[in-house]
Length: 272
Image (cartoon, rainbow, N blue to C red; front, side, top):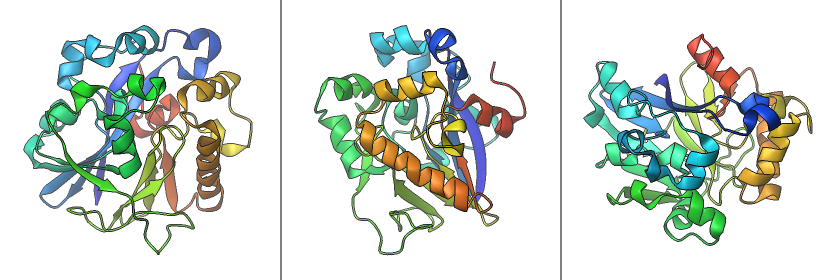
């Protein structure tokens, strides 16, 4: 399994320089999985329509996230520039369905979209004001081919509950439930043959959160209170990731969507 790392959106959160300098530049790290002649995406970042019209993301998002309208960042454009055919993307696995993770779904209208069942329910039938704001109907208006998962496997993954046997995907790809940021948030684990990669979505924001309990930067701790739908569940999920990072760091590479320092490690340059 070959993994190509993509940044499918760049944000400059307006309040970050004062309250959370670690997040003053924020990427949207996605993964393109290449297995034979088939391609699959882990998250999409923003889509081509979003980059043409930022109002699709919502006024609150535009005010706070300050998304850079770069038409070259959507996954469909990057895949084409790599010399690959975007139509070969048969499956998309979403850590969750927030605007900055699912905005590119309309660019792949025929792909199966794998999510936890609780996440699809939250996106299509939001239960409160936070859910109504974070999920954008325009990203689902094309009628995605949903594959919703709710049955965990008997065999655990490094001690964590997981979903195996995703239809249409190789057995090296698993879902790892990590609820809290959203109702059905999950990580995506991929066996590359040389070790595992766990894409944690928004279960954490910077690596400092994993190294010592309670040692995240003050601004990040404050942001978690605002961004997570269920703070207690999110902290339990974070502790699960900490254990993987602490006990299995040699076997599992742990990454998150918005960590600009992870961006530097993956792409060999700072996020501009």
